[in-house]
Length: 386
Image (cartoon, rainbow, N blue to C red; front, side, top):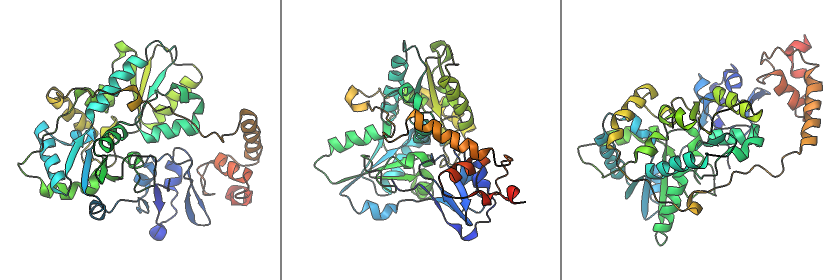
């Protein structure tokens, strides 16, 4: 895959806000250039929000050009968009406006999300360990990168939007169709062939909801497209509505809290919980960076509309939704990892450990690991030079 977050440095002031805000130490400044390690980057968009100069950007699809490439275009509407609307009828108005934009069909997949929500509650019972469910690419990459021992705790489900796209490909197998995912966050943009070359996906293009919203708003009128939603699917994307403690099910939102929970699970310190739903964004997917409202009102809006979400859950065969999570087979074995850890620690002992960031790395450990790999040398440490 191509790097997701790009650096356009014309007006960059090297303020190191992006470096200090990155939760995975994926950003550094070397030779006056901001460098993003695409392997460490989990596409959480925190650096984009921290950048005052707006030189960190995400590539977007040229939608008008893409629409001309296919005979039949289908838009997949994110369930989280419901949080930005005041009434259930508005989703039908929005769906019609999206169709007028140039799509032949508009599809909503909360029925698939609802099926996987119920399946997760069933599959987490009696496992004798804390199971995890996450349909957030950001969180799943965090687990693969930093908590590989917890991979077998992740329930083996594919992304609902990917399942929806796969079903549409099968339905229209004789047509030249284009499938477009309207995304509420940066992480979800990665679940498509364009713009980041995720060629394993059945989704052809992904773009942000905010990219389309000004045009959608102009096209919106009293006309409606029939869109039905499933209440369990809607509940599954809101952290406050996910499960309940009587079922030993909880939700955790935000990277700092998720890391705390994963640390506890890794050391078997979390008891009396069968299932944890993990959300990168505040209040769940309704806190997505590309949504125009706020998650406080969004949660209220969704609660007020739940009774109108009457669509049945989707009927899915196990083969349609199951996807085993794996880690890179080239990962270092335990002995190699221990040797690397000792090497980095030895270098770290020679550094001041102030974590000031003046070297261009988030902390002294980040600098030590780059010195250990031979990418830079200790002269970058200004404190040590003085």
